[in-house]
Length: 286
Image (cartoon, rainbow, N blue to C red; front, side, top):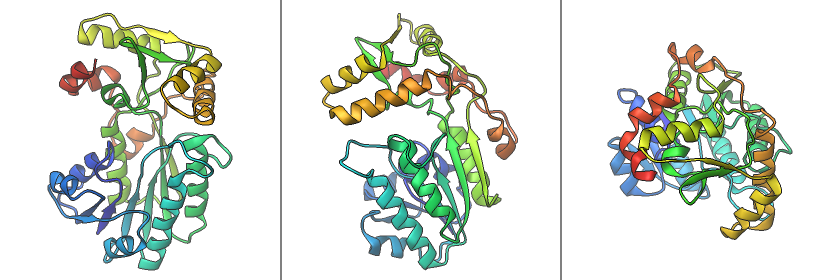
C-alpha cells in the first residue's frame, strides 16, 4: 500500500491518478477533496499524530509531499510536519519513503531550500529507505498564479536574463510513480524540463498563446522585495524571496537534467506542450 501525502496538490493529485490500479491511499485534510480524487483516502493532518498513525496502517511506501514556504517566525512549519510523518512512518514499519523536495535543498538555505534540506537530512538518518526528487520550478505556476508575480497583466520578477528549466507537474508525478513502484533507494534525482527559458521568452510564448501582449518586467532584487511588501508580505519573507530570485538570476536553475527520462523512459514536456495541454486554464488565468 502506498500513502500519498499532499494528495490534492499540483503533484499529488496527478500522482494519485497515475497510481490507479496500485493499492493507494490519498492523505487529505478536506474530505471533499478526497472525494474528488475518486479513490481510497484518509482524512488527517500532519499536526495530528493520531491521524498519521491511522493512515499509515498497512502502508509500506510513502510519498512525502507538502506545501511550500510561508511567512512564519522561526522554522518553516513544513519541517515540523514532515518530520512528524517520517517518525510515524518509522513507527508503522514503512519500508520506503519518496520525498518531494526542491532543487538545491540544503541546510541553511533560504525558505523552502533550507526547510527541505533539514527534512532530507532527517529522512536519510531515519533508517528508512529513501529516494529524493528535487524538481525545478513548476510550469503550472504559470497557469495557477502560484509563485508568479504579475503587474498589470505582465510577468514581474528579479531573474535577469537567466534561463530556468521549468518542469511540468505531470512529469514530476510520473517520476514519483516510477520510484514508488520500482524503488530506487538511496538516490536523488533532479527533475527539470527539456529546455531552459528566460522569463522574457516565457512572456513571448504566453503572448502568442493567449493572443495579447505580455512582457517580462525585471526589477533589481531590492526593488522586487519592496514590491512584495506592498502585497502584504512581511519584510523578512519578502527579502528572502527576492534573495532566491537573485540567485536564480545567476543561472543556478538553468541546467537541464536527464533524470525525468531516466525514471520514466520518455522525454519531459516542453513549455509549448504544457501550454497546449492546459489551454483552457492558461487562457483563463491570462
